[in-house]
Length: 108
Ligand code: HEC
Image (cartoon, rainbow, N blue to C red; front, side, top):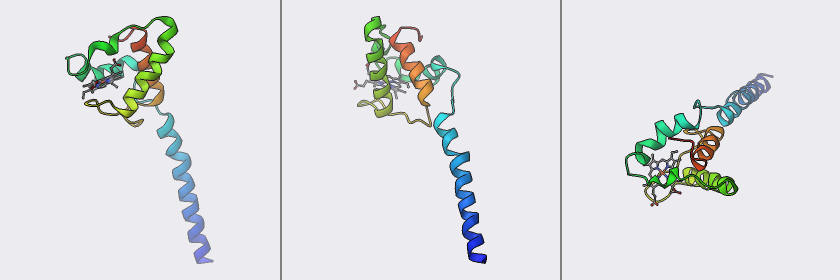
């Protein structure tokens, strides 16, 4: 009886962790928008000439989706001297907004 109670408690704790923590980590937004994330995370290199200015090139409408995904890939995987950024640093929604903003020339 005692043993069964213990394992039920463990199960309850495990499901609390699963329900309470994992989904919020995956979907939580850490930034107000892409511009704020760019200013705080990317400008540090890209606005002072360490990272190339090419990130701010505005793409034609029919290439925006391609460029947006390209930027997301570079940010998630890194590129030579540029480090990768994890979802816990820039969440997916903010990164999409940031990459789309760069591709459309809206981020300063
Ligand atoms: C620690 C400095 C640093 C930070 C911070 C940084 N980058 Fe970079 N980034 C670089 C460097 C250096 C390169 C050039 C890498 C190469 O080509 O060897 C680069 C290249 C890139 C490229 C490829 C060039 C292009 O125009 O396609 C993209 C896209 C990019 N960075 C986006 C970002 C974004 C978005 C952020 C913020 C989330 C960011 N970077 C943060 C240093 C940085």
